[in-house]
Length: 148
Image (cartoon, rainbow, N blue to C red; front, side, top):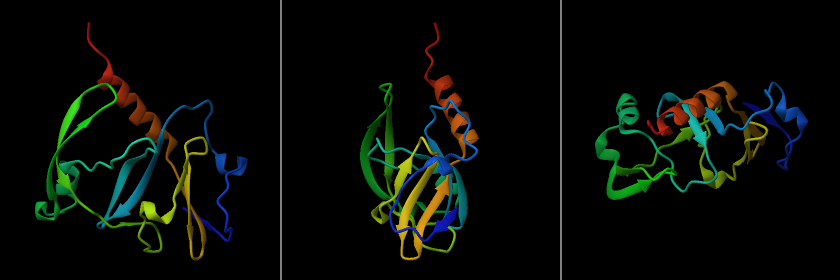
């Protein structure tokens, strides 16, 4: 993570430092919330939900009583369906202890493998983990192959 005094959010070639090209991965970052570092968080501008696996919430000692029960089905890109347990709001923190939520005008760039957001002290940049992105992509491709 880095902080600049810039008021406008822009991306340039300096943001691509250490990026391995060519790449077509999504963007994966690590964030700290509910006293745990959570790795492999997919930053996906195309979905309308953020998913935390029930197993992950249990490992983070989040009581199930915090989950607002809702019966709903999510449909994946390949047509698979998953039933959700419910919804939960979790505080997410970046370094410095500030809550990180979508209302803070976060701007992701998969090309630059980072996200930026305006704060009262400047623009914060959170760099993605390209190697984790590659691993997630490989894993998703393995699970989506259809045996013949």
